[in-house]
Amino acid sequence: LKNWALMGLGCGGGGCVHITDMDTIEKSNLNRQFLFRTADIQKLKATTAAEAVTRMNSAINIKCYNARVGPETEEQFDDDFFEQLDGVCNALDNVQARLYMDQRCIYYQKPLLESGTQGTKGNVQVVVPHLTESYGSSRDPPEKSIPICTLKNFPNAIEHTIQWARDEFEGLFRQQAEDANSYGRDADYIKNLKLHPGTAMSTLTALRDNLVTKKGSSFKECVVWARLKFEELFHNNIKQLLYNFPLDMTTSTGTPFWSGPKRAPSPLVFNAAEPLHVDFILAAANLRAKMFGLAECKDVAAVREALQDVMVPEFVPQQGVKIQVNESEAQQEASGAASGDLDEEVLTRLANDLPPPATVAASPLLAIEFEKDDDTNFHMDFITAC
Image (cartoon, rainbow, N blue to C red):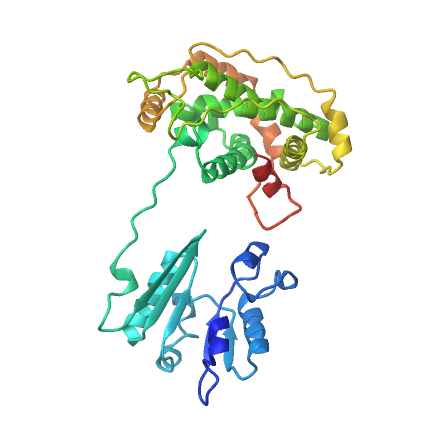
């Protein structure tokens, strides 16, 4: 749009550029375009973009709409609207909308400039009626997912650590709250949960932690929980990993185990004077407090003071702990768990430790939805610290 304004597109007699976007500007939009500024956050994208290019070239004729493109707006973007166009340019963020616009351009015989970005990658496709294939004629191959064992135990790229942190956020602050609320409102929750042996044990353990043994009743308790979670994630799990796979371990072929994409980690020792360590505690404790309906606390000094009273048990690596090295081992373990190889007595004991469902239903937990564009909600602080 900026380039069109500088080229003079839509400036002649009868010329016009039509733009539509029903969305508003978020902070994360600012780093990948030239039309929006910090002061524009929460303003409508189409209106703001039109105002910006008009300041660049006052002769441009531009008309903006605040509507999505789709079957529900075909009365607005009707035959008369499409017949007047010389071409269409897409800058959409989902495949469904792209396919819809592709079909509209085929129907009205309009050239289409299809474009999109994902991270540092970009794509442009020119579609000309009767000359090229349409956008919908081909599909991009599905992107390879990151193996679970890589995310949990052998990350070797920054995207692995980011995805791991996002998964931790979802599990700790959304999924566990949703599980607790489901237990509170569903009388058959435990019975149905036992039908899924692959997740029953971990889910019941988390329920007992959140509703009984580690229930967040005060912000200080949330700090204790966060400190112990730091120890679990960044010290204990790493020590267990190195116990299973020592630094001098070799494979059956004589190759060092810790080579190639496998990078040997080092257990972190918590240091209250290390800003990144305290950032994790502050973010995790506040997210935990929000989940339990407690007031937030941004006082770093108060958090450091609360940390002084936390008793962290010494961790000793255990024999017999299985850690998956590759995806096939992870699938085999999942198949074994799904086959029902679980201790029914342990499950029953965990279930008996839980409070009555009515008690939980009376005070539901807040399942936190991740929001990257709010600098005050501790979401990105947690991801960054992880």
